[in-house]
Image (cartoon, rainbow, N blue to C red; front, side, top):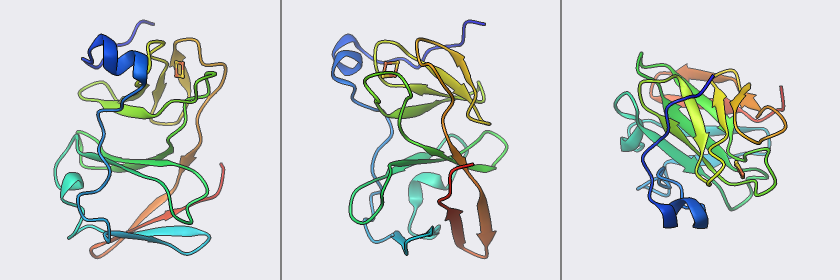
Length: 142
Ligand code: FES
């Protein structure tokens, strides 16, 4: 199956520059060693379907992509393509997929299964729980 591709220019693909930003409010999330707690009031990017942020750095041992799908459900993925460059991923609106920002465009479904591209394997997904205005993401490999 050939997926739809996110529109990115040649240089963005070659350099592996993702479309998904880091959070505008850097204090919108915390990591305690087992889980991320994300304050949705401060995570403006996740306020509407299609919105996404990438969490990385600090004490966080792996990069995480958090996105809200077209039905309003939030998903969390390890933000690391399994192809050699291990580039970051972006949501592809209207397709229920996330896609590598590099030239290979490896693409994964919301369960983390690779459905297109040179990547040899699937990506990890993480369970999310909503508690009032806090989103909890348990960081354990599935
Ligand atoms: S690093 Fe993702 S397709 Fe190459």
